[in-house]
Length: 135
Image (tube, rainbow, N blue to C red):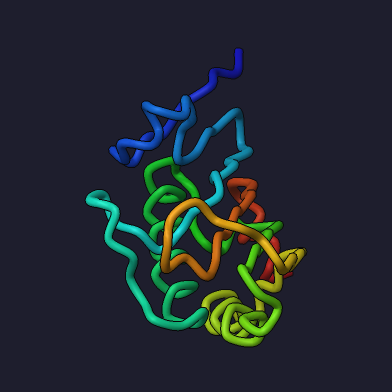
């Protein structure tokens, strides 16, 4: 029988908004929209590339807690506050995923709650999907 596993990050927003950083069900792991803020709410990075790299490390931690890795990511969704930020976010995506090349969507013109946020990223992974890379 498959069991659902909610993976928290400890953010105050998870409790307030009723969500988990990630959810694992079977071999599927879905990571919630993630911003470049730490647990205290401080935003890391002054441009889209820096924020994206910070976000991907947060996503990686959630994936590891769920028994997955960046190699298992099959889809990402990147939201930017302004399309002028697309290149920084896209270059960070390439830097992190290289030859993994998950399916991706990038959407601009998003209004984030709070100031300083340029990027938000979601990721979906299937545990074991990275193993098929070598085939």
